[in-house]
Length: 302
Image 1 (cartoon, rainbow, N blue to C red):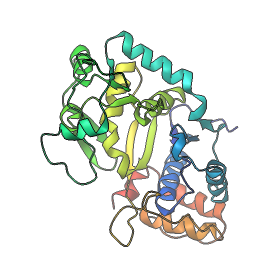
Image 2 (cartoon, rainbow, N blue to C red):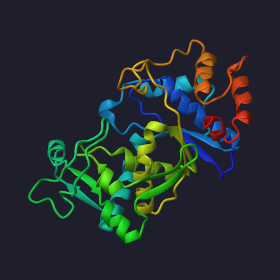
Image 3 (cartoon, helix red, strand yellow):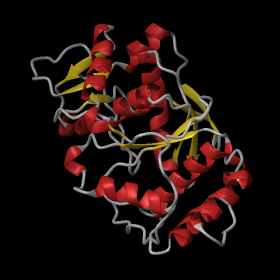
């Protein structure tokens, strides 16, 4: 294990629903370079809490792909599937303060309760139906009482933060998202709770991830406040788009990276980050990019 200053701890946290594609390598490379440029540690976390969507063997395949690109975790890989007790403790903490409550609503009921037509690719806003009780319904999921957290902790509303690439950001979580899920109706832990608990447990100070995840930031900041956890600094990288103009993702059939030539894959990712292609070996390329990307956001905002 490498010894690194605690002043910077970054991470790359893929879900094993398939192998890395071109877009995910951009985020991996950006997070690795940012950690190295700051003399910090770079960690890998496998976010495998959504077990029905996890593909057998994908996690080991992801790690092998990263290794082929010279991107190896400085500490043992953390697997979210081993973290049930930590998530339960966090939920119990929120329930004890009156900041989380059981919800009996189905997805159809939430959809039917929408007051306005939603923009494409946006989730339904939870209207708070069960905030004051289940009204005879059986409990299905657990939700954060956003309104209560903001009031009790006297938090600014909307939630504001600064993204190192995108600049000043804000979101009204109550109006744009509603009371979001902490534990799902199928008993699995929600992404928002798991990522907040694990970022704190791993001492993550800087989060570098794809811009498609920027919309999660306000929810995570609210949870950090509610759980008394520190808020990392955030940087969201440019997206890689397919020929249809949609972001590359496993959901829309993005092809797994061809790593017969790892340097070629890294050069393509570097180009998205505004960095020049490098010749030589993978290790030489990574070494040459690191000082150029010192404060990698300087390259990203070109």
